[in-house]
Structure formats: structure tokens, C-alpha cells
Length: 291
Length: 204
Image (tube, rainbow over all chains, first blue to last red; front, side, top):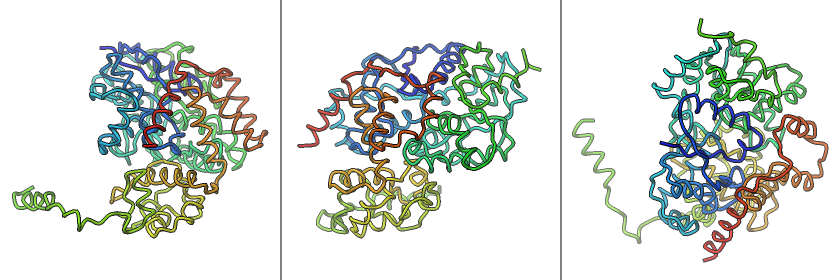
């Protein structure tokens, strides 16, 4: 079966590193994907002033395309997009009138055939974790990480994850061989929506998370959401300057950790797109094989 | 569950439906909470002020009224207070409150509705930049079909006139190939078409 792939706007621009490393992992795991044709923006943060019908339609038009293009499962890597899809489906299930309006708008009757899946839902299965852990090419055991989920992977609570204590990324990254630490900031908000407007709020919330990671003794943070990555990585030096402190914590997407473990070449990790100590993961990695 | 408990639960779940004449409608409690319900399908009257939303809210420290206060004010019909507050613009939509509310009051959806009412009724957003950001984001994806980050940042700069803010960040992003100068036009027209159909259908 070929999986539909919905990259979303960010994976095309600000986080090509996420996209490229994820494709590399999916290829290594023999999971064939094909991009959904003519995909459009899921609505992102703009939906907070759009009407409910507009918000649901912006996401669902992509699901309509996936259905028309014959997919049964659609992979949605961006946490924000994933949440928008889940929101739209949830609202339409609760409100038949909204469903009717959205179907009229999109001139498409939803059959419910296409399932939305997040890559972590797939990676955190026993079969895949066993395969990852038995085919590791780099040894990441000396890299201590904390996994940060942010808002949209764990909430609203009807997702696949536990709203207060999510674990899929912890397990996946552990399967990749990194040392995963426990900490208390897995689901705290980084203020992503305010990154460009009330930057002070974004900096404060992100600072709290970076503090938590440092206290836990982490060498790096592993994330899943492009918005969180931007705040933690690209704005880290700004936070250090504002609060007169020093973190020096690299921030990786879980796909980059998996790809590194599976031996992907550097050009597929695209670490050069990062701001803070991008090479630390590879510096800490054992050169080959498991120990 | 034992049989007795099961029987009790069935009884509660299948409580007789209330005849329409005795049904309590939100608009009888407050007109404003009814407007919120119409836009968001959230009945804020279910709130019993436990303030879990406020304890967990990461942005409460920066708000003029706490999330629970805004809910209560909305229920009381204090429309000017709610729509003129910074709180409705400072909700980060992180959904912590939604996950924890014992009454299933989806505060994020309710806040979306309050913002929409504020804009449509001409209330001046207390956090103007936040409102501009949402407006320009929506305009951006409507126009291009996919988010054009450089366009959005440029538009925001023109509006706020804070040209130096985030300049070094922008350069850093550009240097690392994170920003594209030209928009991706792979879905041109898709969102515009949706917008015009939604507008038509909402006018009805």
C-alpha cells in the first residue's frame, strides 16, 4: 500500500530538514509514500479568526483530494496540520449541519475511507521499533535527550497520544538508541502562535522549557512540531541574551534522530539548517554498529 | 460494572427527553453566550468555575482577565468587557484547558468565536499585532493557497513598522535556506475558491 503524504507548508520551506530526514527514514523502513497532489494549507494559525466552516473546509479539502486520489492512509508529519485535520473531523462528527456545509463547499461527500496518521503512531509500533533497533548503523547511546511534544500532538485529548503524559516519541527515540531522560515539560506550550507578534510571551514560555531540559541534564531536545523548533532553535540565542543565561542545546526533529541512527548520509539529515550546535548528535555518535 | 450499576447508568443515560417548552436555551441565560454557541457550538453555560483552565493556562500571567473570568463575564453578558479584553487575543490555543475541563467547555473554540464577534462588530483588538497576524495569515493562504512566509513577514512589518525587530532572525533563517523568496504556487486558487463558497453559504 502506498501512503498519501501531506507535507504542509512548513515542510516545504522552514523545515525542509524535517521533510528530508523523514523521507529518508520512511525509505529505510520500506514505507512507500506519494505526495497528495494539489495539497493546500491546512489553515494553520489563521483559522483562529476564520469561521468554523472555513477552518474545517481548509483542512478537509486535502482529505477530499486524498480520497479522490485513491489513498487509504494519509501521513501528516506537521503537528499543527495534524491537529487541524483532527479538529475538522471531530467537529464534523459532532455537528451534522457543519458536515453538510463543508461537503457542499468542497462538493465532495466524505466516505471516511482515508485515515489520518501521524508518523509517530506508525513508528511507535512494536514491529517498527524492533526493526529500527536491529538496523542501527550509528550508536547514539551517549546522546542524552528529552522529548518535547508541545501542544498539538497530545491535545485535544482524543488523539492517539496521552494528553498529559505522551510517550510515543520517547519510545521511538529510545528504539533509535539515544538515551532518553524523563522530565516534566513534555506538553508545555512554547507560545508558537506569538512568535512573530508577542515575542516576549514566546520567549518566556520557551525559556521555561529550555530550563527544564537543562535541569534534566539533556544534551539535546527532540521535537515534533515546526513551530516549537523555530522557537527553541532559531530563537535560543535571543532567549540567552534576554535572560543572561546559556543553554547551547541543539534541537532535533525525531526524524533526524531516527535517520541518523539508521545511518542516513549527512545530506539527508540537513543539520546545516539548524542554529544551535547542529553537529552535536553526530559528534556524540559512535562511528559504526552497536556496542 | 455490576448489574445494579449498569441499570442505574442506563437509566441516567436514557433520561426522558425534555419537552421543547421546558428546554433551557442559552439565549435565555445570556444573549452573548448564545452568539458564542452559534459560532462555536460551545455552550459556555456549562462552566462551573472550577478554574482548572486558569491554573493550567501558560499565558494567564500576561492576560488582563483570566480565562475563567472571561468565561464568567461572557455568561453574564458583559460583552464590552469580553470583546475589549486582551485575553481573547492572548489565548495561545494550546488546548491545555480543553484537555482538562471537567465540563467539556472547549474554551479555545469559544475564544475563536469571541474574536470573530469582536472583529465583525468593530471592537478594536486590544492586542492589535496579534489580530493583524491572524488577518494577514488568512489573507496570505487565501491568496497563495500555501503559506508564503516571506510575504507574511513583510506584510506584518508594513503594518507594525517595527522594521528592525527580528531582522537578524530573518537573516539567519534565510542564510540557512529556511525562507523562500518566491511563493509556492502549487495550490494557487484552491483556497480562494473555498473562501468564496464559504462566504456564499454563510450569507444564507
